[in-house]
Every structure is written in structure tokens, then in C-alpha cells.
Amino acid sequence: HLNETIDSLERICYNIAHDLRAPTRSMQGFAQILLDEHSASLDDTAREYLNRIAASAARNDALILDLLAYGRLGHVELPCSRQNLQRQAEAIVRKVSDELKTPGVVVRIEGPLPHVWANPIALEQALTNLLTNALKFVPPGVAPRVTVRAEEFDSRVRIYVEDNGIGIPPDQHQRIFGIFERLHSDQTYPGTGIGLAIVQKSVERMGGRVGVESEPGKGSRFWFELPRATTAGPG
Ligand code: ADP
Image 1 (cartoon, rainbow, N blue to C red):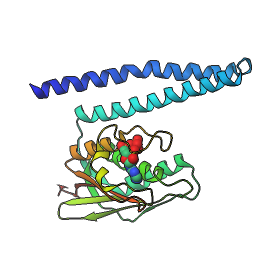
Image 2 (image 1 turned 90 degrees about the horizontal axis):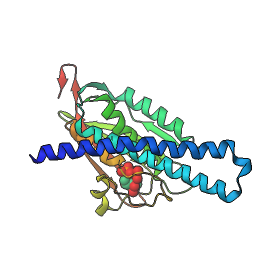
Image 3 (image 1 turned 135 degrees about the vertical axis):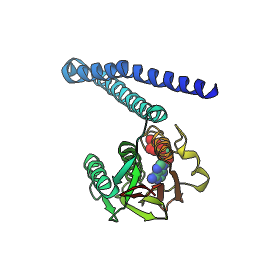
Image 4 (image 1 turned 180 degrees about the vertical axis):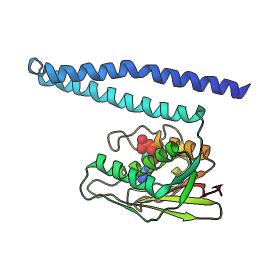
């Protein structure tokens, strides 16, 4: 009975999040139209307010999208198959680095990475979120240096994403995987606080686990484990 209640609550949250997108996008769209087409008849203060409305609506939309992604993980099937981690990681690194456009960024893949037993979409999401964080949480003026590598155990592969960023106090390591848990204001480092919760949920649904080793000022090493894939199947 409890499971059914949780299921139905998750579905309601998912639908609410979905329905909130249309009004949010409409606010963002109309604010942008005013800025683009009626800018000449507005004074600086009005333009500043419109910019703030557009930015708040964009933030709301990012939050809703993350909530939808998180909610979806609770109820969709995640069929797993043999995934070429090296190829996936190369594609994600290319995409994330292209979007970032910060000079001096170095992302290194210590390959060849092994094959894993995973759902391709969930794997992409987990790796993308860890990489995006690794590139984001650096001190001002420091160029991010990130390494992706893997270690093979008997039937598991542990994938590491290591950065030279601000680091995380040990007593916060558990907390940051919770939904909406953030250690910084949105002004210092923008974000929704859902990224790591998505990583944890995706990895656990694929039969793996996640963790982090980090200290303030010494960078972070996030990891997740997935079943190793042989040509015959997992393990
Ligand atoms: P978001 O990135 O949207 O804030 P996440 O759930 O991805 O949300 O991360 C939660 C919090 O964990 C972040 O706000 C940050 O405080 C901390 N964190 C995550 N990744 C890193 C990292 N690579 N280095 C330092 N802190 C991190």
C-alpha cells in the first residue's frame, strides 16, 4: 500500500512539474520579446526588471527539467545492454567542453575504458552530470583540469571523474547526493541541486553505487560503479 502511495505521489509530482513548464516558458518568451522588440520604448530600470524576469523563468525551467528527469528515473524501465564506455565518454566530453567555451579547460580520458553493462541514456546522464560539476566547481580564475578513468574489479567497473576544483568537506559527502542539497548560493555557482541525486538514482537503478573522495582545496574524485560487460552479458 505504501509503495502504491509513493508511486501515485511520484506520478502527481511528475505531472505538476510537466504542467509548470508551459507558463514558465511563456514568461520567459514574452519577457524576451519585450527586450528584443520594444527595447527602445523602455528605460534602463524596465529593461533590468525584464532581464531578471527572463533569468528567473530560465532558472525555473532548468529546475523543472531536472525534476522531470529525476521523476522519470523513478518509473521508467531502464533496459541495460553492453555499452562502449570509451566511445560514450569521448562523445560526452566533446559535447560538454564545446558548450563550456572556457579557455584553458583540459579534460583527459585515461583510456581505453572498458565496456559496462548499462542503460545508455542513464549512463550518459550520470557521466554528463559529474563532468559538468567537475568543470563548474573550480575557484575563480582557475582553469578546470578533469580526468576520467576506470578501474576493473571482478565483475564491476569503477568510473572516476577527478577534478582540481574547490573540494568538499568530508562531513558533506553524503548530503550532497540528496535532492536540492547544495553547498553554495546560486550566485556563486549556479545549479539546481538535483544533478547528483540523478547520478545516484540512475546508477543505483542500474545495479551500481556512487561515492566521492574529497577535501576542501584539494579537488574531488567522484566515482560510480557498474557491472562489467562481457560479450555474453553482465559480469
Ligand atoms: P548543482 O550542481 O546543481 O548544485 P548537484 O546535485 O550536482 O547540484 O551538486 C550538489 C552540490 O554538491 C553542489 O551544489 C556543490 O556544492 C557540491 N558539488 C558537486 N560536485 C562538486 C565538485 N565536483 N566539486 C565541488 N563541489 C561539488
